[in-house]
Image 1 (cartoon, helix red, strand yellow):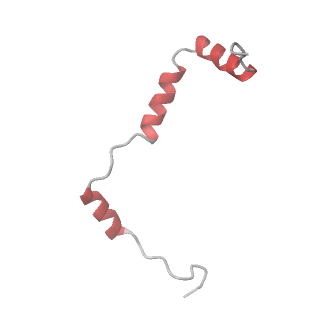
Image 2 (cartoon, helix red, strand yellow):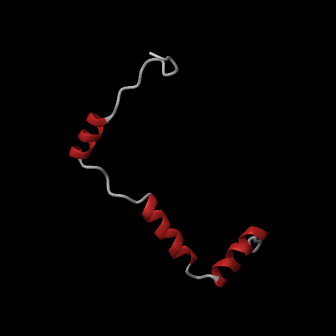
Image 3 (tube, one colour):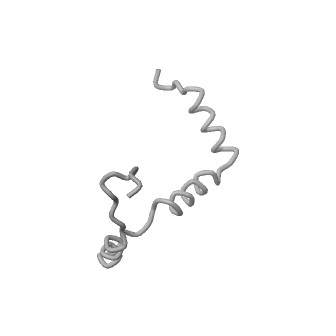
Length: 62
């Protein structure tokens, strides 16, 4: 049972051998969208000041 591999695992292993640079592309995409430096306290303060207040009932025409 320890040697069992599902069809999906076999597919992924074949894909990685055919396209060895696929993981580097995934990591580059992640770094582009998610891996960003945290905001400084000054940036956080400016974002808080710039935020608009939402009305209590957003669907009214007032």
